[in-house]
Image 1 (cartoon, rainbow, N blue to C red):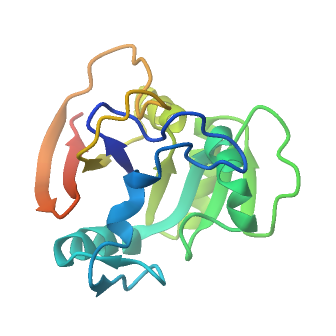
Image 2 (cartoon, helix red, strand yellow):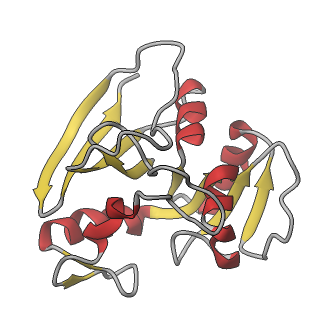
Length: 192
């Protein structure tokens, strides 16, 4: 499953994302995590709107392993040795060595390798994918079943794109659309 916050113009970061600078000037993509009055049952400290909490917690509870690309990993300061999800293991996809991996983190050299490792660790639960390059590689390899866009009503104008160029069209089926304060949750299944 790919589930990321995204601007209306398709960016998952703002300008100048990098280590120590996070998402660049795109932090507003995650304001919806803290703008509500309903505590998340999965992530401590998250207070979402009631509709967002239902969507977010349902999806987050399904995930057992997260796969992230090297840019996401570096921009997030190695997730502090953990994972973006408090209950998951993390697999970092990089062609370069990843220094100082913790016991909750693994390295993979490509998307197929990462998915194989994640399946071994997942215990039958879902695998979450983070980052535009990872999402695109997994889609190209036919390894994505669901896409969730947490669409934020902003045009960032620049940053890292959610999706990169794909070699062919990929048809999606709408599963659910949930409007909420500051975000619209768009849940799709990938048609085969």
